[in-house]
Image (cartoon, rainbow over all chains, first blue to last red; front, side):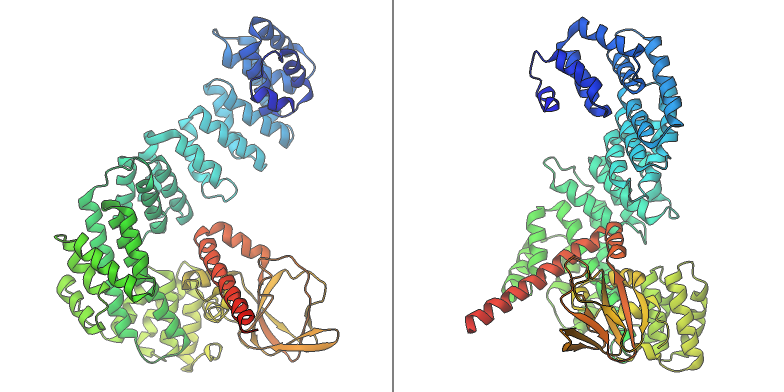
Length: 436
Length: 148
């Protein structure tokens, strides 16, 4: 109840606020009472709070010291020594004390020595302590903690807090933040989270980093980067996206669509459930490429109109689809993208679509074996695993070497599928598990 | 039955109605947490008035769904037991007993939620799938009441 009164800044509650300090144990609540006293209590309140430094409650004394330091016009060596000692002891204490200490570092004014202690708390075994340390690092804008905060993005328990903390640093850290996006060996999970943080920071520079990321082949966080760009576009003050780069990315996405269509043409017919599953996976990648093209176009054109058109195309209702195709046809008039997109949307027969792919991107039809070899060597674990299973299902011993090469793949999922396919190919019989 | 690879399990999971609209990539992720089980005749998979904490997919064999000692129906290959177990903590109203030696996939609810926490895109797709299912159930209900 009193916490609510203090939060609303009701005047003449100095005495209650001071008593509240002794009754409450939570650092944030105590801080709120101190903030109230700072606003309403004047010099008298400051003297009362100073008296707490010598009091028996060490936790309260530490909060009071942090508050006195944060509001002092001159250095207060006594309060600083007390706080530093408290942090030292708390680091060896139980989890609630460690969490309180981590929180206090963020409440006290920036101090390199105290800030350095945050690093220990960011690696603490208690979740509450790490979360408090993350919040403090954000509050202090402590750049020395950026690497640790990026690493914490990979931990599900802290990803949300670490995202917020990193976003609070603003555009200054974009260069450093984008390092995992440029590092192909960085864990996919961290890349995904970093893309989100860059999107939260927003602005033209942020969009440049995300677009540059999308230009590289095979990224784990492709969807996240696209989503981040879309969110930036949906804001009240969207940045101006680099038109040339976006158009290049749309073109690349549409090329991937045609390539997938060529693969599907070669995979068609024959085979059982594993072959069908492979085709389904390729089809999904093809559809994703088109979705990506629309998302990118929505950065350049009125986004609502483009996304509505995309939804209408996938609505399954012919009249809505026709309407959307007509809209895009006129909207993209004069753009080279129109020529690439229209054959896809007009739903001509496959031969016409493949011909368009040949004219636009110099693609040519490949025999089944070539497409399968490409899929087996594609840096896409799911396609590789599916291709192994499909090759085994069709008894394609001509794929044996490509399948064998995957039996030592770093991903267990691919390795396991390749080993199973290897056994089937050697035994030259269709796997019983796939019989439906 | 041989031990299925993750891909084999994903292929089987695409037949589960709840997962049928999920992308192959997501099916493979769910397959990675699905445990392959062998049960003997008479094995009680789910008991009446007990919390069902997993979804089962029958790979081979038949499972009888019983209530009050009576068999209500039988579940066979590619059919599921506990369709809503992943989203519901209600007690089971039926008992599921293996009518013959059977192989199943078991997807534990907690493992499933861990997976969703790591893959938010899957949560989104599942919401769509669930909504679609609820809508079709409602449509079926409205249709039958209109007929009735």
